[in-house]
Length: 259
Image 1 (cartoon, rainbow, N blue to C red):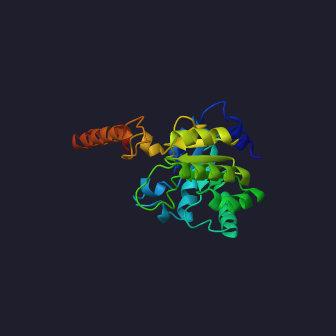
Image 2 (cartoon, rainbow, N blue to C red; image 1 turned 120 degrees about the vertical axis):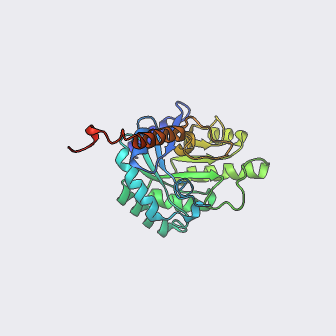
Image 3 (cartoon, rainbow, N blue to C red; image 1 turned 90 degrees about the vertical axis):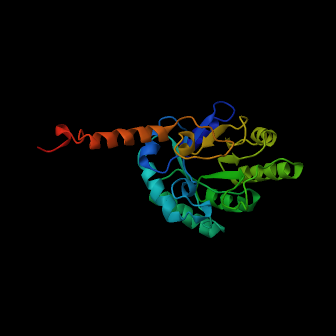
């Protein structure tokens, strides 16, 4: 087992796991200093490309952004989302996972779904491809508006069944997205692998957010997002200073010029 993955698993019930997204080297090298997992998520579709759905993200896009992020990641576990329609069956999943890992030198891939993808996860793990699962709201397959999961007993049973299926299949961890607190707690208590929550309560073994959301670069109305910074204001302040400096002919100065 990858030593980084082993350390992640060992954190369960001991220390909260920190996971953040990065789609480029500059963000990755900052996050790498403080996170346990750096995720190159297909959320880049909406964050960077303004797509209405992650379904529009393709494998080539994921690979190029992951290659950039890889440069900045030295200590953290680098996990890459397999995008929509790239793991419909065992053979396709293995082929694309091998391609992603070979070209990006990432540590693991992430797939969405529970019992539906359990056999695919098992096949990947048996072929030495580490896999992180993802249940609850699964953006690649959601239809209509996002709606939190686990409100009624049927949904709770399905979520628990999905989590146990992923654990049995060999996944080393599971992202729980927008699941009610009580079922998030129950899943975390009943499985031996870590749960990483996003809108899934403090009971999870760790938390993940889209970095652009938490630094205030991307405007979002999602309830589970907390803005921990306002980088957009910092960027605008710098742009205004540049504009004024150029108009006042203070930039470029002699030291910025070749004389």
